[in-house]
Length: 376
Image (cartoon, rainbow, N blue to C red; front, side):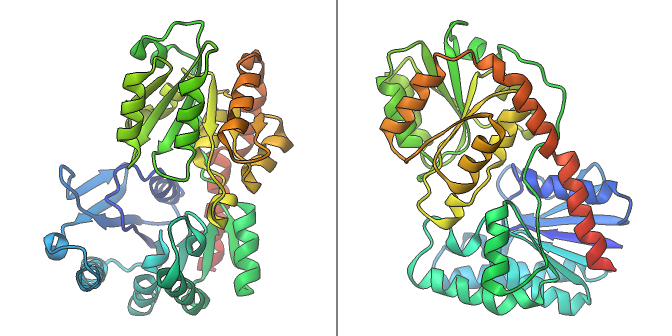
């Protein structure tokens, strides 16, 4: 059997797609596993990722602009390009990694006579920034096409419940976006790199640097904090310039560019507390269970999380840190002030125990069970 994953990204740091494709390939249930995506400057057109064949497509319409008509043309070109390049590969299962790919996935399901798996990386129709006509179209599109999906994979229990209730379907499975656990020891990498004294308690934010993820609140808190604490932001996104400016004006705020996925956990292990302060402005954020929380736990860090339903319930249930009662700078400041007085090293064993329970090595078993059931 052969499995094709389709992504509308450039596959620069798409760890979830890569983990899934690698787990499926290594299961030996599939002869070939392919990933198709978009090409970007400085990237290889094709790569062999330990057996998984990645191809990036440079669309002719790429430089024509971004208005609605051009976007439609880009989508049609990508659709035809993917179809043409894999039509002779006997694709048995197609896995799409975004709601926008549902039309393409359904079309290829018919053309290839294959099964279709929809991996929703978030609650697609309820995500931040989606509103008005676009939201109505997204809801309409998903409701019309999801009956043609053989199985839907989601990233949290609340999202699974939402899909089952909304569409009256049962073929939904939760596969947490947790890391592949490696034996990574505590280290001094970040403090050494940034020139931070060893006695300073270092908080870390890793991930996309965008609005709605608590960036302003974190900057506000650490810009005023007088205790021996500091925060390091690691990642990429539209808020990076704001963070760089704040870092230049404060000795408690630091910015570190995103690193390769294989290096991330080594940096994480050099901090003392992980922060995931996502504002629950939409259901997708309220129900999210970010991979960064699992990464913090994997290296033994306690976490500070916002008042989103999934994250706060998880932290309270497992005793791996502190969660906010409301989303505000004042509430975050209280959590920072409380945690900075704690011996956070006592959380190391507990965090790693919980991480062991949810690690990717367990999640991939759930993933492979989905593929097994789809093919039966």
